[in-house]
Every structure is written in C-alpha cells, then in structure tokens.
Image 1 (cartoon, rainbow, N blue to C red):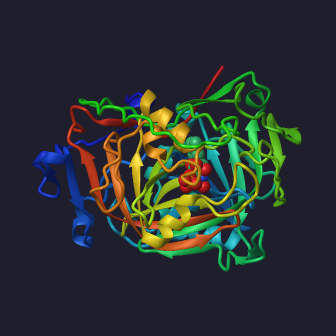
Image 2: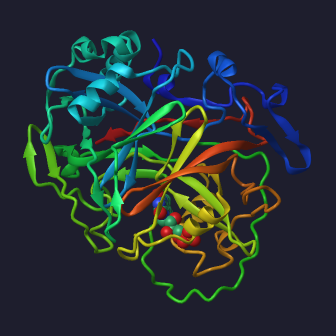
Length: 459
Ligand SMILES: Cc1cc2nc3c(=O)[nH]c(=O)nc-3n(C[C@H](O)[C@H](O)[C@H](O)COP(=O)(O)O)c2cc1C
C-alpha cells in the first residue's frame, strides 16, 4: 500500500528538461525556457501543469435542495478580505482525462448556491474520500458522499454536508452583487469564465475549526513552501541606503513551517462550540484595526513572488499569498493585489499600477531557504514607495534583461501577460496568462522541487 505521504507528495520535474524539445537551454543565463503555446492536441496527450506552482487542495461539497455532491479542488484561494471571499475553479471544457468537465457538480453548486470547503488530515479518511472521487465519475457526483461511507452532518450556515472527519471547514455562498468601500459596483455575477475554467467567487459565511485546535491543545502544521536544493548560490547583493522612515512599522514575519494556533498567530475568535467544532459566523463588515483585520483563521496558501517594472525601469517584488493557478487552457495564474486603503496591512500596493501600466508580471516560486524567507519578509513589509532599492535590500539579485524582472535565486519563474482583472472589494484579481516559463538549470529529476498539498494536525 502507498504511504499517505508518498501518495500526495508532488515532485517536479519528472522528466529531464534538457531532453525535452519544448525547453530551450539559455546556457549563459543558466535557465531552461519554454514559450507557452499549447494546443488541444498536445493537452489531450498531457495536460499536467507545464511547471510547478505550490497549491493546496481541498474537498468541496454542495447541496441543491434535493441532491448533495462532492468534488476535490486544487488551488482554493482566499482572494479578498472584505468581504471575505474565496475562489474555486472548475473545468468547463474537456482537455484530457485529467482536465475534464465537472458539469454535474457545477450544476448542483449553481442551483444550491452554497458549498462547504473542507480539510481532512492526511490518512485513512482522506484516502477514502480521494479514492471515491477518483472512482465515481462526475455524472454520479451525487453518489460520492454515500460511497465514502464516512459520517456527515449539516453545515451551520448552509445545507452542504460536512464530513465529521474534517478538522477545518469554510462554509460559503455564491457572492451577490454589492459595492466596494468606495461605492463601486462589484460582483455583477458570481463566476467568471476564462478559457477552460470557471472561477466561482464564494463569500465565506462560517468557519468551523476542531475544538481541540481552537483551544490550542492541537495545532495545524502547514509547510507553505516547496523544498528544493540549489546546486549553486548567487552572491547576496550589497545593501543600498534608503530613507526608510518608520523602522518600527508593523511587520508581518514569514515562517514557512507554519503552526496554527501559535504565539505569533491570532487566536481563532469563535462564537460557539457545536458538535466538537469551534464555530465563527462571518459578517461583511470592514474591520479597520491592523490585527483585527487579519485572516480570522488558518487557510492553506503558499506565496507567489510577484515582480513588476516601473516606468522608470525600477523593478519591484511583491510577495503574494493569494496566488493560484485558476485556469489550464490558457494556463492562467491569478494574483490578488490590494487596492483599498483600509489600514497599514491593507492599502494600495505600488505593484498594482506597475502591473496595470505594463500589462505584465512575473511570478516566481520560492522555496524553503533562509535567504528566500528573509526576502519574503522584507519585500512583504516594505513598499517600493518607501524603498526604491527594495529587491536589493531584500537580499535578492534581480535580472532585468527579460520581459519582466526575474529573480535568478528562484527555481521557477512564470512570465505572465495580463488578460483580465476582477474588482473584489479590497483586492483586485489580476489574471495573468503564462506566456513563458523559466526554470533554473539545476532543477532536474535528480534535484526536483517537492511539495505536499495538505496540512496536518499535531498534538
Ligand atoms: C507572506 C506574505 C503574503 C502576502 N500576500 C499578499 C497578497 O496576497 N496580496 C497583497 O496585496 N499583499 C500581500 N502581501 C503584502 C505585500 O507583499 C506588501 O504590502 C508589499 O510591501 C507590497 O509592495 P508594493 O507596495 O511595493 O507593491 C503579502 C505579504 C507577505 C509577507
């Protein structure tokens, strides 16, 4: 039997890029480059992502009044803070055995209008659910929950079934038209079609967290960055002087070995305990305090190292936790960039105008490494408006000879062309079609990136 860890461990690449005609070796730069023009014929043969972006996974149930359905979704992501919104993407066009239409599930979701997004610890119960989803086709999605033989209960804010094995549940409903903080109309429709995928915008109505975790007797353990070993190191750039005026400024420390709850996280501020779960119901009210406006509970996410170029040629880096692959054909990466001025934490990012003006951004994949983590902490707390040498002072080298600024410390960089944007309330979802991928030439099947998409619970 395959061990649970091996079963879900994702390893990239599995083929040698030097042997693949799709990849060109840029020897002087020490990158492999791939221009991304894919056709349906090539996707039919192999529609796996052309390179790895670290994405979590979740289980989703829905209820349409008469029928319940179950699906698994790669790359759920919190995209907006006020209202608290997550997106889930589903395939609407048949590309391959891997990427096929989830029509029945989507029909039930659109009819019922609500979901329960759930996380189960790696182990027997999760294996049962995943095996059932693989074995029972989308046409019979309504039979899956029963086929898992796992016990369920009803959600607290909607009827979507919740597995009793889930340690964390986000209940949500399709978002309704509303106005953002300056009165602009948003969410004309609760989903957006982009190429092969439909992106649903779901407003979180309640969060359930296992009582022992909420009380700090157990912790969620999440490895938020992939693991990789560079075969060569780039020298750290020399720090540049910048007049950073406020050194005590509020700082968001980054730790890729994340534990929740812990001393440096907020406590889950629940309302009640129901059936062994701490429950919080959410409202759409804007909370302006820096700490109070943090995400109310853990949600598994990684980081995209989003780069962009200012008109005067200055490169910028914005670590972006709300980064996800949201479409396969074309291959689309979505990044959520704050545009609203709420407080120190949520204010308009310099990157936003730069990405809008150039219509491009880079998205690098970070990994577990002290230098990279320091870089995330610095660049994620300093705006380019405060430090024009931001990338250098984040301790990272930048190569400005590509279409977007590229950080050669990172194993993979996606070069993206903006093909759409969606205003979400406090954040803008920028949709970037990947036009080129750069991979360091010390990334290989003998030296791959590894990634585990599920969080665990530890005592
Ligand atoms: C781990 C981490 C994740 C972050 N995720 C986001 C995000 O998803 N969206 C966002 O707008 N800001 C996010 N930020 C904050 C920005 O990176 C930060 O405000 C940055 O300084 C913006 O830079 P700029 O103003 O130069 O564009 C994150 C910061 C950190 C440390």
